Amino acid sequence: MRHATIIGTGSYLPDNIMTNDDMARLVETSDEWITSRTGIKERRISTGETTSDLAYEAATRALSNANLDAKNLDLIICATISPDSFMPSVACIVQERLGAINAAAFDLTAACTGLIYGMAIAASFIESGMFQNILVIGAETLSKTLDWSDRSTCVLFGDGAGAVILSASDQKEGIMSITLASDGSKQDYLCLPAIPLSNPFIEKGEDVIKPFITMKGQEVFKFAVRSITDMIKKLLSKANLSHNDVKYVIAHQANQRIIEVAAKTLGIPNEKFFINLDKYGNTSAATIGIALDEMVQKDMLQPGDRIILIGFGGGMTSGAILLEWS
Ligand code: COA
Image (tube, rainbow, N blue to C red; front, side, top):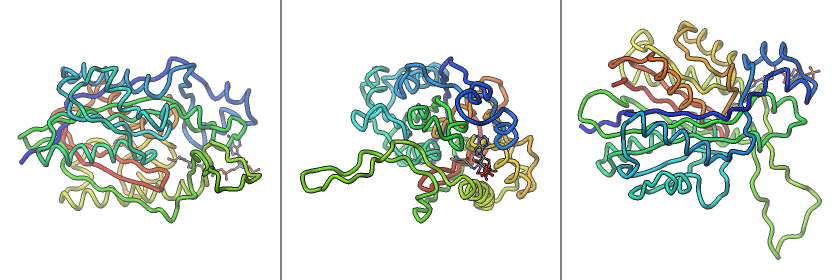
């Protein structure tokens, strides 16, 4: 059977570091509050690079890591909630810049679960035999979606991009199992409005819709813990494995406390959960790709290692992938 396996990873973060102390000069907050509630110490904030710039850099590094020519890509998927524009898509802009002339390209919106949804779509295309090589990118400039006077949200997020290249393989390694879910009844937990309805048939209202992220923090926290615990149980039972058979879990990097509560509930040691949110904050669709690439750069993954990737976020959406590293 054809499997989808990861043959390359890449990531890119803007150079500009914004620490918690920098944040405290902007809003009424402190390093102590942010660190103790979230684990975040600093984040990267773009000083001019767009989402497609970050996506392109991450994609270039993933191609080089995979030793693959961009012309061999069949599809580019970019997961983002902060595209440069609704059209052209970030994926099409990246396709042109890479010279990936044989690739189809589109963006997808599944918020912080975006990379997982993208990898799931890519795996299906590969397993069906339709495509051979697919680039999946998670890229965000969330800094442009933040109300920088709202301390309850602006301290949490950052900019960045992560990318993976999935390829067809006849070996048993690669993606073993996938689970995806959505719960639209919780759509008001995390919101980022787009262009409001406006045409000659609509009376102009007084309300001005602000293009900023709003969030019900405590509800999101509970949803996130539940998603991680439910998804891990589901994936492991589907594969007939226990958590002892898994080397690492890469959960969406939103909040260290979310990960610790989930780990405790599942009885999985904290050390199995990779953490780098202290350096980058929550970069939405980008966190899992950035984390995976950091692990690759640090040589933490060996052939045969089983790892779980888990995303959760606005929509609400959630999803997880069990894979065997090759
Ligand atoms: N600095 C200082 N104080 C802050 C603050 C900040 N950055 N943000 C909020 N506060 C204050 C609140 O105003 C509130 O003050 P009050 O008690 O005087 O009203 C107090 O801290 C507690 O606020 P609360 O919202 O109850 O805090 P919390 O313990 O729930 O922590 C989050 C807030 C956002 C850290 C937490 O809810 C969380 O992490 N939720 C998940 C968010 C997330 O991960 N979103 C993305 C998912 S993809």
